[in-house]
Length: 159
Image 1: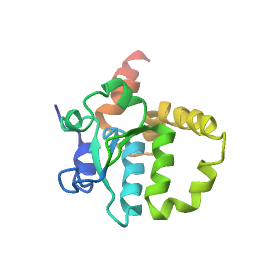
Image 2: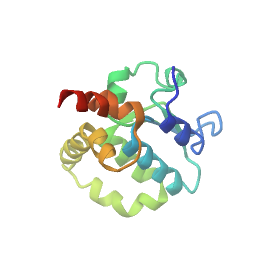
Image 3: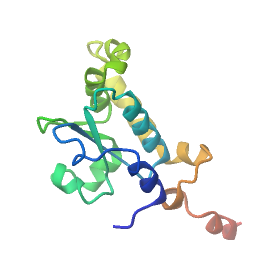
Image 4: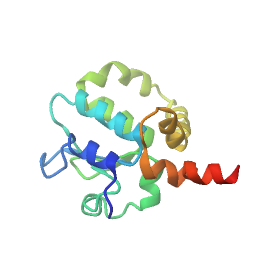
């Protein structure tokens, strides 16, 4: 697979599973500026090194989560915990609030009984618009933005 600039920037800072054996693996969209930024925040909040990271575009994902399809991983972030259980989207973030000490302050909010459907809905809305948000961030999202919104050259030719 071809490696994007975003993936190179992200992977140079984020430890993969082979560097942190026995950790929970966060699978994220390494072509997305928003996703990469969010995962970098998780990295800085992970004081006890409980997480490792893989872009869903990395071939090693097939070793960690062979049963997940590309489409499933594109829809939301996944966490494969140290016991092999899989958590996705809002449930993954909810799980991480129990694993990362610095996220403990938000844990009670995300664990209000009956609130998970709300968090899932909110997560899906943000995830569905992530490339649009990334494009507005001013960062170069490279091929990912062109894939979802067409190149600026294509848009100009349509005018």
